[in-house]
Amino acid sequence: MIRGEETQIFGALASEPSLGAAGGALIGLPGTHAKWAFVGNDRIERFYTFMTGETFGVLRDHTILGRTIHSGAARDESAFIRGVETARDAGHPGLLATIFSTRTLGLTGQLTAQQQPDYLSGLLIGHELRGLNEVLARELSTLARKTLRLIGNEALCDLRVPEEVAVVGFDDIAVAAHVDPPLTTVLQPMQQLGETAAELLLKRLRDPRADVPGVLLPHRLVRRRSA
Image (cartoon, rainbow, N blue to C red; front, side):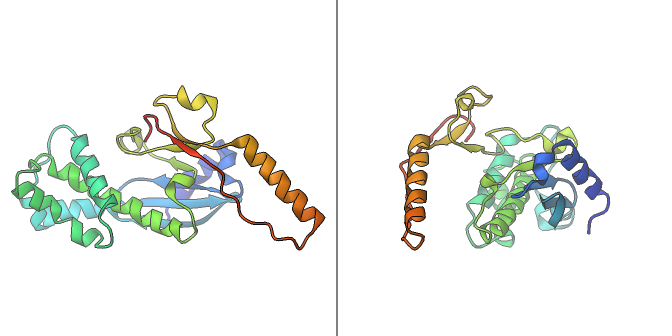
């Protein structure tokens, strides 16, 4: 169900028309019931709703996890990131098998009572992103390959690179080393790429039935600070 969020999405499409182009983008509206909308060809193609915020409230206030949780005055980013990474590395067991780690880490002294709510929040958001990645995997894509936009207030959209989200680019264009933070990117042999594409095209033009094989060209990951 979508109630009003479509207005924000169409506003984003109007202010940044490239989001509605073929191939589209993924627009997120974080909140109690987070929405992720797939847009393309100037329309909303489909969307998913994640009850992430409400689930956090229920787990904190109405389950055994709440017995050791105490909300701190300040957000603990390290605990939050630990939760995201735990969800990312959880493998197949999934959310129900990992949320209890909030309590076990607290009982064993690895998380303080004030760190546990931020850890649990990161854990739930991490599983939300895993779910999106699994949807994209069925389309032979990933979050890293999608154009992403977040709509919301600063508190909801204040994701720091690379502490809370990793960003990796392609082509290693000149500006990649000079943005803040410098962009981790994949260096590709652009001249060789163009020459190979031209050779394969000419081969197909000479003989439409010719076998044109796939070609893997050398490439290199250039590690900087964004991931």
